[in-house]
Length: 185
Image (cartoon, rainbow, N blue to C red; front, side, top):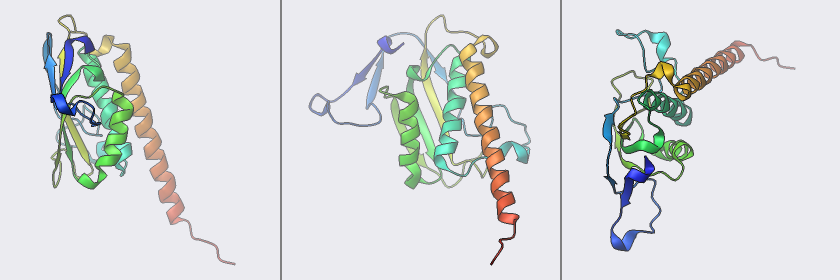
């Protein structure tokens, strides 16, 4: 799909390094709109169950889970991160934007969708969520695969689940270590 996108720059500002494009021209295709995704599982209970929101406290760790959720959801429609044309990113602390940008760049590489970043006091999904991202992607006219038939989606989902389990184990280990009395000589 990258061939169907063209970054639009002001003539005198072409060489300025930014993590986003000011505008993208979509030459053809259909648009895919994704709801805002957080580090929580995409499919979670309503009303919410607290255990589904046992999330890592750090922005980088949450950003990795969000990006994996984005990859899985895009793959369900036959798309990839390189098909994203616009992203709106909501952060509970804009001071952590550099951490998000580092993860964002590691997943997007040279691709630069238009991006808006907004600081909010709290995300509606859950108080433990630090970031929510919604995107618009361009889908090929034949991109209608179901997530169950997408190997990429399965791999992304498994990776996100593995990361979540590792983080939970790490939290438990840290909690156990804090409970252990320290021996003094």
